[in-house]
Length: 124
Length: 344
Image (tube, rainbow over all chains, first blue to last red; front, side):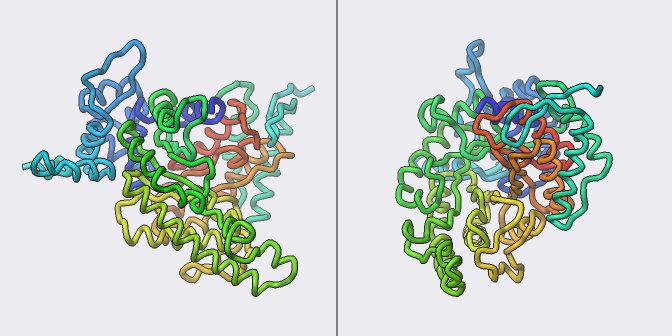
């Protein structure tokens, strides 16, 4: 795992939750978007440039502000950050992209009243 | 006397060589693919760039800042990281994976079918603990449907006995069973919240194995328009263990990566993973040039993302379970720099 996963991540990866690799990956897997298109889409939604998407210093702060979930370490305490499902809910809104687990979670909230809108643009 | 350079062989061993020898390996590697695949070799400037990567004395290398790509990780986790869910969580939080993949150690859709409710439970828990996409993956693994493991005749025994028709009939019977199993497992994991499904090492048992995968993908796409579906291949050439099977008019036997991509996209997958196997007796430079040559025709034709397989024993990587970081980083960079891949 050290040789394969860590080396690939450091050599060419977008670094997932440390930056914005998970967001670009969602567009690729769900919509079949090529890398340039997917990076541009995510960058536009975040109001940054595609270059910023792999920059963990830029993305760490932005993910915190937008409540998209982020990594934490010993020196940090993000107890008020969103839970994973909450973070994915925000990601689905940001990208206007249904996320399977979020859709199923929302469907199970029937006792909490009407379902929340699926995307930001569905909001009244 | 020319300065010595340390380099890797396809089995992972470290050897002393020279820049001129690496250049020769690169040229031989691309010519080997061009001859076997009847395709164009890499261009001179591409070989020059590969030479700079593989003749470097640096322990580690990487793509340019801003040129990073998505890493879709099959089979995420390792026992040292705790439970399967703990391992996925560590992959997200500590190892910075762009995606993770829940998997069972018996990496076969047929095997997983018998335990699918438990895999669903793991998927549900994974979705509650992770923010990055969590896929589920396994292999089509058509060989499991042949005797003595499965109900169909064993084409690996029938073919040497020249029982060609029986061998073909056995594979066709197995295809139908495999499609049912793959669709059943995929829909079950989708129901549990998976972000996508991975059909890994498609075509490992030949053209019938690949056909089963394509039919499963086609069925899933028709039923679940939102489902993310990745198809990763087993090899650079689809073996014709049946020989006559077609998908929408395309003969599957003998398909190379660009042809594989075309039928995978037609079936409805959203990500395609070409695979080119490593020759362990040649250098990783030779293997990298060969692999890139095979995959290059995909890039211009692709309408879906290309995530080249660059794991153990594929994509110019050594066939070694504990890959050296110098070889991994070189292969990683070479693939992205030369092919402008969408991911690995």
